[in-house]
Amino acid sequence: MDVNVFIREIVVHDASEPGGDAGEYDVAFAAGIPGDSSSARTSPRWTNRVRRAQTYEVLDWLGPVSVADGGTLVVSARGREHDLLRDDALLGGVAHLTAAQGLGVGKWWRTTNGKHFDFLFAVSRAEEGHAGRPVLSGRQGEIADAPGPAQPAPDDYFPGTD
Image (cartoon, rainbow, N blue to C red; front, side, top):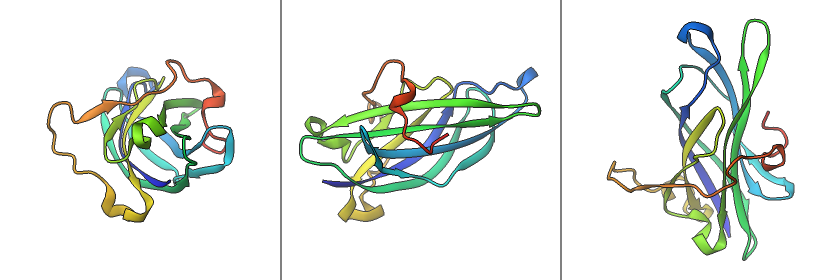
């Protein structure tokens, strides 16, 4: 099945600036199949001044990604926080959506395992194009916790998203 992924927003857990100042995030999102970095579709870099415990709109599409029958779709994000003296690595959430879950098509998902940030996303069939994104009404229970590793390892992220 060919799918697209819509990244709606990012939820910042950590901005390492002293005194609560805004940090600058430089993040890339990726979607693909595990173990095949050539399958990964990455977004243009998302950069923004951010503060801890705040949510920011991303509104970006990834895809299409071709997932074989019985396969798994991985969606992840990582990047850098630009600081005056050095750039700190950022590790976002990682989601693993299986064929048993319909690759997550038609639902809203939020990663819950990001060290520095998590993100809200939806999966749609590629043939539906951007119109396939589900409506987000704000109803309770509308957003599911995305399945994935409890503590993502470096191999859980696609190359090129740092």
